[in-house]
Image 1 (cartoon, rainbow, N blue to C red):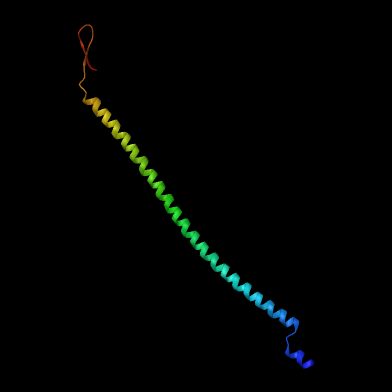
Image 2: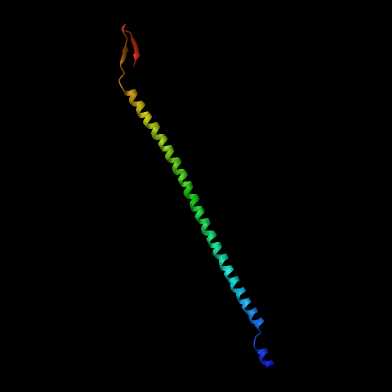
Length: 103
């Protein structure tokens, strides 16, 4: 009977083995989670870079739009001024008949 007991692992040996297996599984799971964390951090960094680029493009687009709008306003004012200069001017003749210059 004593010899048979020596061949079978003791209850504490079984618990130790299960505990070691569980610890090994948890270590593997931890490593997998760390790898996934690094992958997600890399993906986040890529997305942040894309977002920054899009924000810079939007800012540049707004600057370009404002510059073009300002140029268009100046051009339209120039056209109005040119039309005013091209209009024939009437002479202002006052009551006593003297010319006071262009109107």
